[in-house]
Image 1 (cartoon, one colour):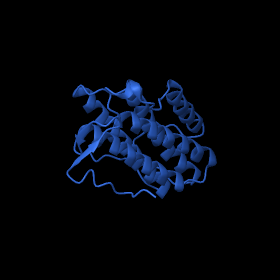
Image 2 (cartoon, helix red, strand yellow):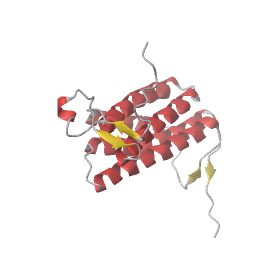
Image 3 (spheres, one colour):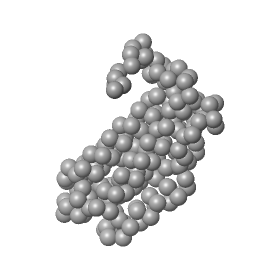
Image 4 (cartoon, rainbow, N blue to C red):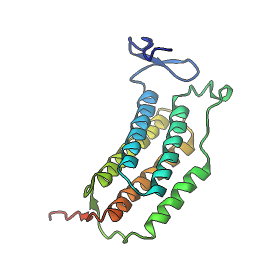
Amino acid sequence: MAKIYTKTGDKGTTSLIGGTKVTKSHIRIETYGTVDELNSWVGVVSDHLTDSATKQTLKEVQDRLFTVGSSLACDPDKEPKLKIPDLHESDVEFLEKEIDRMNEILEPMRSFILPGGAPAVSFAHVARCVCRRAERLCVAMQQEELEIEALVLKYLNRLSDYLFVVARYAGHLLKAEEVKWKPRV
């Protein structure tokens, strides 16, 4: 049985898929690490839901997040020679259909809402925030002219919208009151 520890990162470096060594503080590592964190939060959200359709969608999201992570973890110069799973436009469209499905039964929003009301709601908002951070890191990679698939950015953008609606949908199913933000003026 292989050991879980390799000791290869003890000096602060790691390898991208393809073998290229980079520091563990490299923005590419930070980005796919954030996607990994997001994937864990999506699991927490799923664990707190009872709606089987949403739980199934979240399993698919977790699979796609592994795809996103492998894309980000890959040395772009070596990627064409490697068999890395790809995202498809249909993955984004699937999220949009799920957003529309849930929104059909939700009251229209007329104000900002505060995260909370039930653990599933709160965890979905945390996942949404981590997703937005992953998205910002992808944009930062683009600004540093590091290669990133445009569909990765689009998927993360739509996923954060989806997670927001999941939070509202979970609250609806749990009959948790949405707390509207009332700014002091």
